[in-house]
Length: 93
Image 1 (tube, helix red, strand yellow):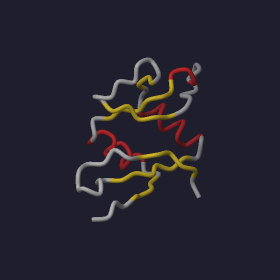
Image 2: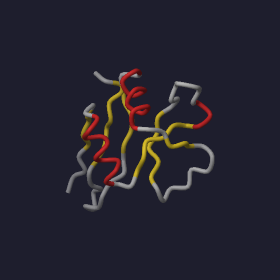
Image 3: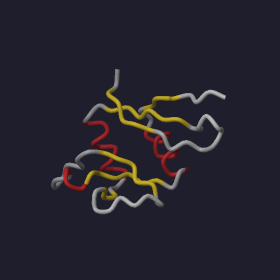
Image 4: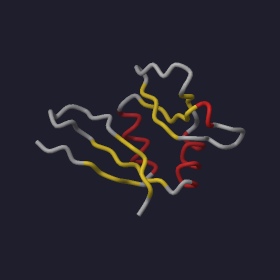
């Protein structure tokens, strides 16, 4: 089985993928300022982020996502067939 990466800018698709994996939108806490969400991340619920990640709203997340002209690269399954949490933010073409 091959692990296939997909790339999307569709907000609903991103949100569905994240929530299906018990994730929430987050920011690197030290980079967030006032109205700026800072560096985007996804925080998975059983992950201990210490103080480094802070949960943010989907609205704030997608505002920054669009402002930075990002795309979401992700995998649905691992090569073993399990649920993958692999993702990264990439620049749009």
